[in-house]
Image (cartoon, rainbow, N blue to C red; front, side, top):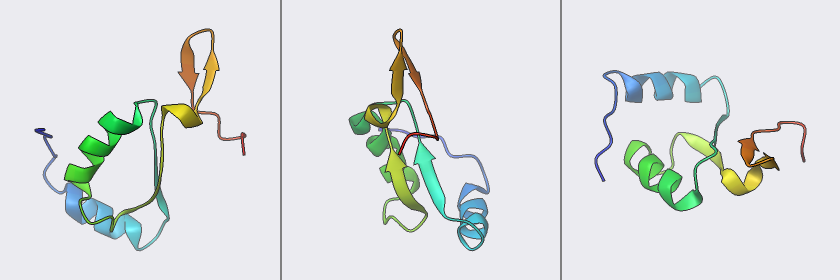
Length: 70
């Protein structure tokens, strides 16, 4: 899979990782999201957690990233 990464992405993630807990929340399927994220973060050094479509709420066919759901 080819993933275009913006220049400076790695440096940005390194900087943010030192200040915040980085979590990815996407409405994509787990298989697709992992394929992309494994290119961006192959060793798991940046993102503490990954949330996918199955973590979203489905409202009339739309996947909503509801941060109030536990």
